[in-house]
Image (tube, rainbow, N blue to C red; front, side, top):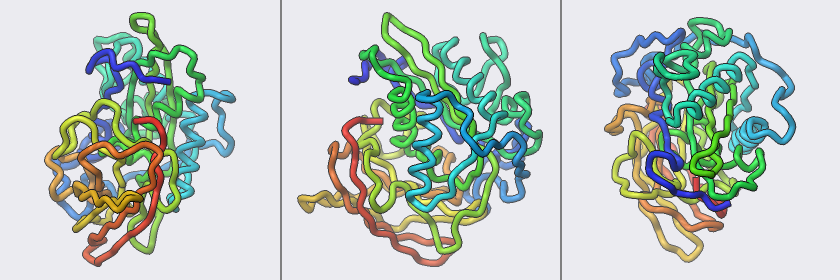
Length: 336
């Protein structure tokens, strides 16, 4: 299952995902914020964003053993383990995400937005595409996207799904797919070939804020999490600050929409006692203006070790009140 790093353009790359959320989220493609995250209300005052259950289904509709079903089930398993509420499949968001995954493959590009002059165009933003697919106009929606080339043509559909999900979990600005206070998702995946190598393209549409905690922020990963990628494979756009090359497993520290999370200190310690001082990122110091106020991320500036247990210690403030978190997680054997 070795990933083929053919080039920086076609190897696993990341879009500037969550950019819509960081700029206001909004419904129907509208953008109501000033574009800054330095406020207590987080992602552009989205606490009043409309929510809806239109299109939600109780039982997954994805094909058995598909990449989409693997992403959906694994995402919910991770969220449930860490105390986050599970998310419902939304068939309208499925349509939007699948169309965007196809667009990425048709145009050999990883991007949040679509160009109306390109093949497969269905809408410029995540919100535009969701609305076109039948998701109510005005309801909050955003998303994440990824694409990658593999040198092993025998990967199963489920393995493609795992690789795509890992790419998001390894991203400082993408791990939010496992931790944001959302209640509905749609999942899309498509496959093409390049120079004889299989290429997988994925997109997840995320929607509807919900209250998920009353006792301070939750973390992903959390106590007992296993198998998460030990490093990013190639990189992320925008590039997280203070990184050069690969970085290690990011820890998302997340509250409810409208909350404010700040990090004060953070370390990871391996089983030999080596202490790694973590980079601390929140909406007050994010130079890319992507993180909302309700999420902070702590991450090692260099790759971690595969199949290794780490102890995380974090301190910070949650709506001005001090908090601390300590837990262990274990990395998997592959990168994101």
